[in-house]
Image (cartoon, rainbow, N blue to C red; front, side):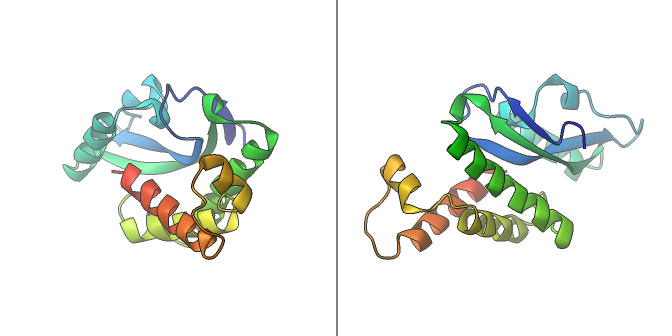
Amino acid sequence: PKGFIRCMDCEGKPVSGGFGMLQEVDVETQQLHPVNTQKPDCAKSRQEILDQFQRDNEGKSKLTLKPEVYLCQEHVAGQKHANTILSHELIHAIDMCRAKLDPLRNCMHLACTEIRAENLSGECNMYWEVLRGKLNSWMGHGQECVRRRAIDSVRANP
């Protein structure tokens, strides 16, 4: 679909990309909440995102995840890196299609898809770990990387 994959400025946030944009609909008017048009999720502050969840919890709006893959242009280090990011984010897309995941409201669902994406995308191969300065040992580095990165990703989501 048009706009499913896009490259954007994530305004200095320490992320390379993501899957899904929050879609907030006002319950009374059934219109998109103005926050949807102001800036992409990757550029929103943690407080702005928490405010969206608060409105959803209070029944003032309904949050859904609009399927979309984005790459943060300021953090993509080249074609190989872009391919790895895309692989990771497309694994999330597959998970959302094949399983009835609700990563917005279920942290176990979020953790599951993050573990799969970290494990299957190639982000935890030795090459990337050496570049990140995170390779502590030859044995078990993949498992440790998947664990570390999945935990970081879940913590980064409200």
